[in-house]
Image (cartoon, rainbow, N blue to C red; front, side, top):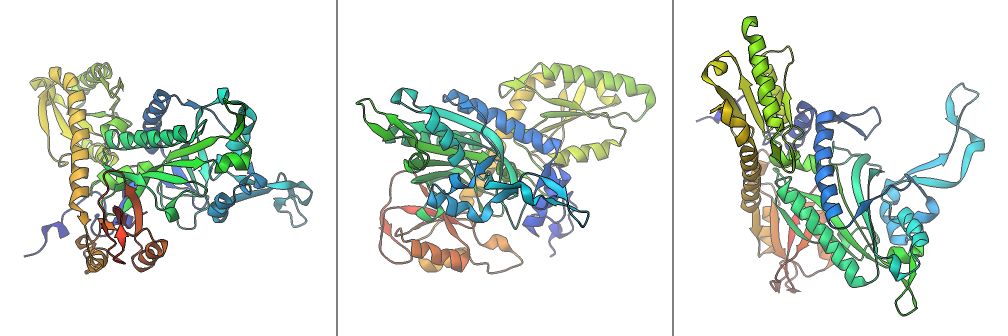
Length: 511
């Protein structure tokens, strides 16, 4: 008996199980989220994709402010000498840096523009891959006494990390993010800050992006360059790979020593500040798509959707067109008076001169949570036809128009919770406790290349803490330790060496 899904028609081709990387690119394109730019490795974020990022930014910024942080802005260019102050940091980013060496162009003898030889900079400038060094130099000027602490600052900006193999949102040479940078009087305060901000990320990813995560610390080889400890939240997407959704770094006194951030203590001594940094980027947009989208396009959690409800007028005859549009306008006005996730419900009426089927499918592919159709028959019945993006695309429910606006916040919450529940069930189904080396290798080795779904996911396995073991697994299987999870330790034996292990760690293939 043949597989009926082989002939099933979907809006996105190929389907997820056929070619997940290409499916992802097609969803991003069909949903009009982003597209490659003329600059290799960079992307153009289209209005619908940027709307998602704006909502992420709005919610995160409110969470940052609630924990006492304020926004500032620091230079895009970083002197090379600043990067060299912290050896491990510069080594970690050296291969990704874009470097500015001249400040002027001129026309050469061949008639072409090029850097002017006389305009070479006395010191090359790095286009920021991250801002610890330039912000540290600024903080060194601001901090004189313990009374100046803590400094709790975030900035929203772009960064550049030169990538050879790019993928929209997930890995591009230029991307958008926020980066928090703080200085504290004591180690305990800085560690508390590191953990607090990881909790902010975990809450945001869970409650706004509807994605469950494992949270914990990175192994030494996976830490941020120059950090004493890196904490992270790790999400599983639909091809069962991991995506690092956010990181928070305890930097100790490494960067304060490099930048000269010193203060007079309460007993009159000089001490270096204790610093942290933490960040989340537009990679989160890609994570949401990889987690929730289906073979018909994007599926957006309502709390980050640019539009919550799209109203599609059905106007088959000119003599009823005005009445239908009037009803659409009235419903939209009523909906905009409602509130969801501490903001007005976002509504759009699709007035384009296109067939209803085309408009409907455009919004399906964009992933708008609720689609509402109003036509002449609905005016007579007093109902509206409502479709939810978390349900089959052909499913409709007819609701009295007079009650619909009041029900929208509840419907959006139901969709939000349903998406999280589906993601949690998926993650848990593909997370396995593994107690032997052979089972581990089998779990991460495809037995049938045509059906990659028969292997892989997250493995919870004991590890003895050896970097050599970690590198061996990475070389053999392209599997890394995603995090050393928080929670009660479960002592055991390393499945690779038989040596003692303090706890299980999370292993996975990753983006």
